[in-house]
Image 1 (cartoon, rainbow, N blue to C red):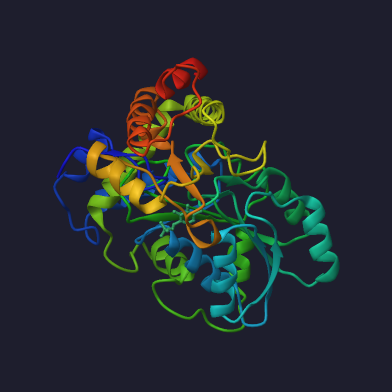
Image 2 (image 1 turned 90 degrees about the vertical axis):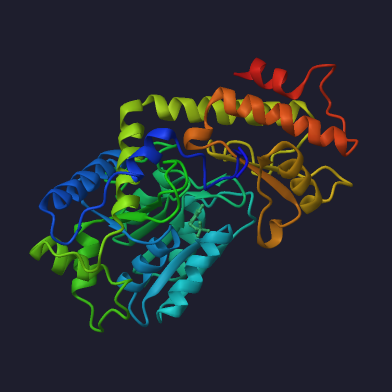
Length: 383
Ligand SMILES: *Cc1c(COP(=O)(O)O)cnc(C)c1O
C-alpha cells in the first residue's frame, strides 16, 4: 500500500508506538490476570483523560456501539428522551431512541448553529417529563461544537440523565465529565486518540447505573447490555465475551501518549484548528459553522463552485496520496472536511497537506486568493 497522508476526521494517522503495541504477543484475556490488570489500568487512564471518577468501560466495537449501547441500556419503552439534533449524529441518536421504544423529543436546528440553554428551556417547558437527554459535543459532519460545558450542568440540575457523544473531541478538547455533571460520555479509538478503529469506551455515573438497574423491562440484547459489564466484570471479574487483546494494547498506548502530553495536547489542537481556519478564510473559502462554534479537531468548509466533490477528492488521493472527507446528509457535496485531530494535529502534517491540496486545486484550475503566497506559507504564518 502506498504511503498516504490521511487527513480525514477519523480514522487518523496511527503512530509507530501504537502500531508496535498492537503487534505484541497475544494472551488469553479470559485467563490471564495480568491482562485483567492491564484492562483496569486502561479504564483508569481513560477516566483521567475524561476527568471522571465514575466507572469507565471499553466496548469491543467502534464508536457507534457506544451510542447504541448507552441508549439500549438506559432508555426504557415509553421514556421521553430529549435529543439535541443539530447534526447527523444528533439526529441518529433519536433513531436509536425510537428503536428501543423511547419517545424522542427533538431540538432541531441548522447544522451550523449550536444548541443553547434557551433551546433546552423551551423544549423542557413543553416536555417536563423528559428523563434523559442526548447531546453530541463535536458534530463531526459539520465541524460544529455544542457548548456541553453549559448544556450538561443545566440538564444535570434538572435531574435529567445526559448521554454525550464526544467521539471526535475526547483527546482534542478538554472535557470535565464530573464537573459538568455528564452521566455517560462516550468516545472511540480512531479519532483524536489516533488508534485504529475498533473500540469504543464510555463512562457511567452512579445515577446512570441506578436508572439501568431499576428498569422495569429487561435490556434487549447482549452485546449492547451495559449491566452485564457491571454484573460480570465489575462483580465477578469475568469478561462478558473475549476481549480483542491487540486493539486494547493499541488503545492503551494511544491513551498513554495523550496523557503524557497533558495540557499541551489541547493547546496544540487549539493552535492548529485556528491556523487551519484562518488559512482557509484568507484563501477565499468559507468555514461552515458559525464563528465561535468551530471545532478545533475538524474543519468543514465550502467546496469551490464548479469543482466536483468526488472527482476532486479522488484526484487528490490518486495523484498526491492525500485523503480528505466530504460529508453526509444535507451537507453531502456541500463541504469538505479536514481532520486535524490526534496525530494529525501536527504542524508538519498540516503544512504538507496544504502544499498538496493547493497543487490539486491548481490541477482543477482553481487559484487561491493568496496575494502571491502559497497556502502552506499562509498556514505557517498563522501558527
Ligand atoms: C466517528 C463518530 C462516531 C462513530 O461513528 P462511525 O461513523 O461509525 O465512525 C460517532 N459520533 C461522532 C460524533 C463521530 O464523529
